[in-house]
Image (cartoon, rainbow, N blue to C red; front, top):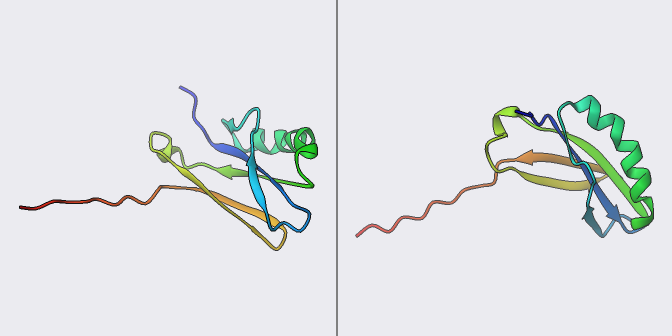
Amino acid sequence: MEHIAAVLFIVGCSPDLTQCHELPVPTPIFETSEDCASEQPFALEDLAGRAPRVLGTCIAVDPAMEEEDGEIVWSITDGRLQASVEKPSVMIAANTP
């Protein structure tokens, strides 16, 4: 069974980084963080024409979350892409008689 250790996440942005959107990555998951880091420059180069600014990062994934749904939460801070995989918040509704 293949384990996911890292996700390559890339966004395309306007020149001033005020508007950004996720870009599709041909190979988004990796068994090691090192594999992700070595692929990142090539993926950024391949996607460079999709937006004026293209930013990417490798996100470490907790192997314990592999069986759960995760959500990528990201932001641009000081010109850098910050991202993490988090468990989505769960709201439980109850109807008691």
